[in-house]
Image 1 (cartoon, rainbow, N blue to C red):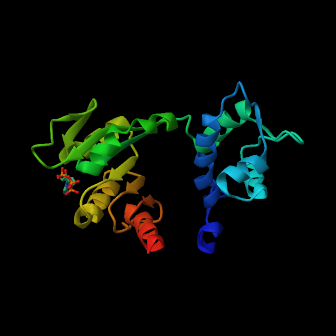
Image 2: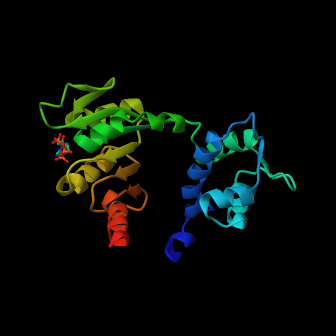
Image 3: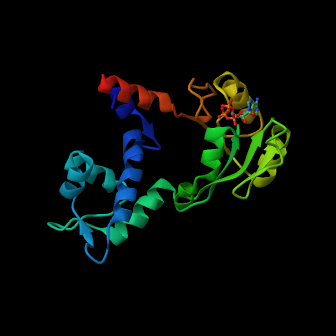
Length: 213
Ligand code: ATP
């Protein structure tokens, strides 16, 4: 993790902490509560390869306090992390670009446990407009603004080809979108008041390929 990232704060919380929390949550949910009711920071440290002090510090943001020797009450910790992450609230999104990646994200059921839902997908290809992906309608891009306003959708996902990503981002912003999750390889730019998360699968891939060599 770069020192640049470590300094970044989101509402007073270090961004790396926010990135680690979903990892803790997913792991805690795999535990059998009949076998285990408490988990210690050193045990979690072993699982994740992080420092135990770091884990205690991260969990401290949820206000859950560990018990000496036994650690954190898992039943208390799971909803506390969900609450911290806002995963227990509704977060609705619209997606633009129903290619293979866009369709896969639209289909993906795993988002449900985070309260995140892709309410509709948009495209300009007439062979795609009017179809459905697992009950999610694919609509023409022309309908985006009106529907976003009516449905109070403020998150946009971009899965169009790279060359169109910035133009879609600009449109989304002009249509009232406040947060953009971009999957096109080139990072998109927007005003500072817009939340932009660029997810380049090629960066992860590059690390794997380079390490293999
Ligand atoms: P497919 O072959 O099914 O299109 P793909 O993943 O190779 O799959 P891409 O070329 O990456 O597709 O395009 C992704 C989607 O983005 C396509 O469905 C395409 O119609 C759509 N798209 C491209 N330009 C725009 C645009 N300006 N606005 C909305 N959708 C667009």
